[in-house]
Image (cartoon, rainbow, N blue to C red):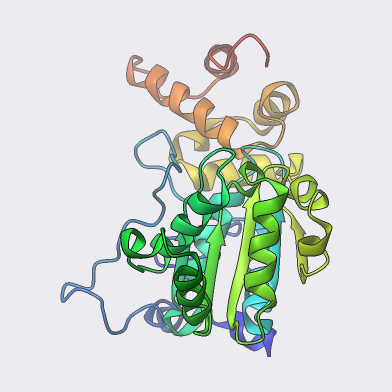
Length: 291
């Protein structure tokens, strides 16, 4: 069932590592009620995800594909997914892509959480995610809990990014919601160190259906992925890119987005638009003293 759900998933405007665009039939799956008459898609990724340079493309790497598979499995099973990995590895971008690829326009609710929030703030964030009246319910704990449990009876996805901000007692509240026999909404917990955070809440950790680590780019992937990410890399030599990845990029896509931005700025000041070793070295020098 899960493989069939994934087989036709694709996102307009994306390219995979082979440079292939999605098929028309796959792209059409994203159409439907609620689209504007012009057929324009909303911005793909917001909420703090930045590519740092004009003309950049989101690349559907095999790491992104594995996140999509893990998400589709978990949503179909109405379970809990923990997506974890080091900062800058592309967890959030991959998750947003995977969410957009879910079939049938499944409702997605995203809870924005602050640092070390207490239970009332977590409850308010969840109410907001489901579009429930926060002011009317925050002072009525039982009514707020009933409203959330009712909202969770509908099939959909509840996403909590930066879950490492949440302390163990509040995580146990999420466990209670996920444990309710009427809950049909899948729960996605994402963040750098999310697996360590859940280790401090073993009751919730034991409910996680899918643990998925978002790894760095393999060194062999870097040249091809970068050329799909931005056309300025077409003139760069493979050996220069691999060497820069060993010394600076380290398979971290956020770091490579920054390098791309600096190279873009450097080429804008030159008549020669070739990315050579000198330009790449200069761009990497802009990353800071610790890299």
